[in-house]
Length: 439
Image (cartoon, rainbow, N blue to C red; front, side, top):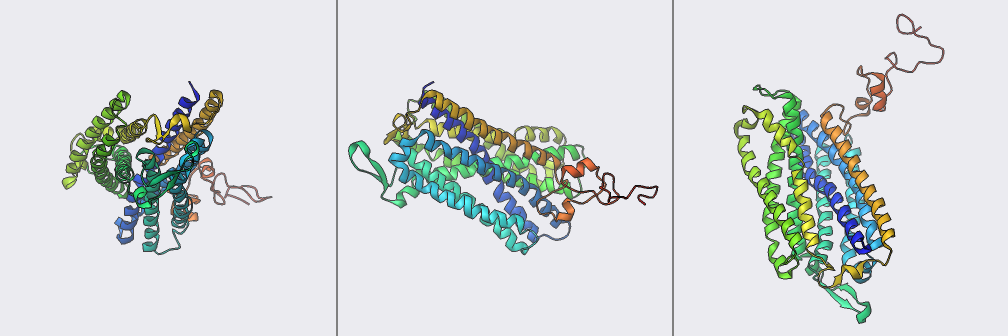
């Protein structure tokens, strides 16, 4: 393969994998915030349910957020490595929104998230919940700035080319046009829908897995954990349904400006990809209409044969991620052979490095990105299966490190030190165990 094709492949793989992190972070954020606020206003047993829900889903959010930040850094590395022409010609326009995204995500959003995590037992509940709503808001602002940058590539507006013909540079001339670009606004709302859809499927899939284990018979599950999974299932169904409607509505609304640019016309591969994505989305839309009806009078948790339904819902968990990646690929491939539609071609933006050099970069960066993704999914899977057992987020240090009869190897795995006299506990120098424990 030529260097240009390898550079394109590297960007496609890195962007696709990184997008998986974004989907889950933005999809889970509003749900965690709602559970957090419901915990603020709940009393008695319901307060415990919503507290555990906030802590459980908050843990998944934090793990995915942290590794997603690392994945984002890997993604941005490639622009300077293999697309210097893009930065030379359109760096001022393309880079301005990304600079704002860096300030919002890496500084403001991360600071607020740190306050939420470490201020769990310091701030009043209302303030603590409000901080996480601010985290969610900054997360969506960050995503919008990225879509502004991407929208410029797809449908360049609000700029002018200046300089000699052989060294022209794009300058921002109309910030309003750049920000209100339909390729940014409509796509952002479409991405919001995709994220909510993905978050909803994760909530439903994980909750269904736990409900299938604890309430597979005709008996309605009882207890705080079962209540948590039922509330999570309801939240996931409504979140996913809203997300599907947003994704469908603002996905189809983009066809007008796509037809005007003509980037997809005649591109057979992209047309087929787009058709597959749309038919998959239609199937998801059908489920989004059916599942909410099963929530009436708790029918979803009482119906016969619900074990099979729970198993199906768990198996469908990856579907929105697959559909979202297909949509993203259709959008990006449809712009070819332009990197900035009608302004800068891909061949003119790619560096003059050898194919071997680009291939080495591809293997290294894609390998690193995939490693982060696999690590993310492995940790999320373990946390999801563990349920509310030993929740760390929001727990007092004594609760996390307590000795409640667990074996020494389990305690050490969690970083705890067994209490004095417990099996595996360290003994003071010169103290030998005796029939009554120690003498």
